[in-house]
Length: 119
Image (cartoon, rainbow, N blue to C red; front, side, top):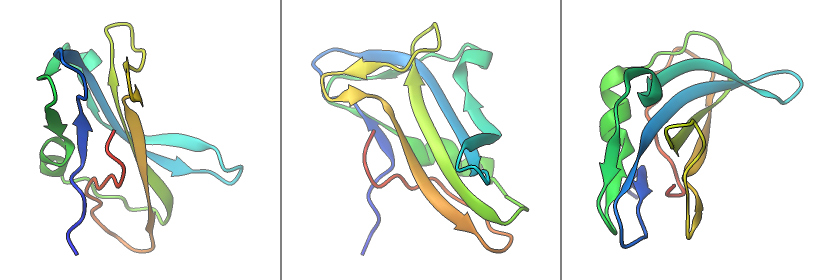
């Protein structure tokens, strides 16, 4: 069974412009998620991304070329969000444009972004 597409969906009739943030976070002993590695931070590079009305941004195409490798065993998640110029998560009529995907590293692996719920 194919996995669902990792994407940010624009469900509105206007363009959405924002700054993509994608990072790996590690679950700590106190169940707190700590940033492990920032993969994409458009605010740092001043890269504005645009999603056309009722269109989407394919996150796997942005994530996968980075070939992220994690060398520590543990519980991790990919965190992705679309931010405004002040670093706030953009909200739409369906809610905030952010989501996570959890995975476990038992061995050296290369995680690729797979978000089961579209953000």
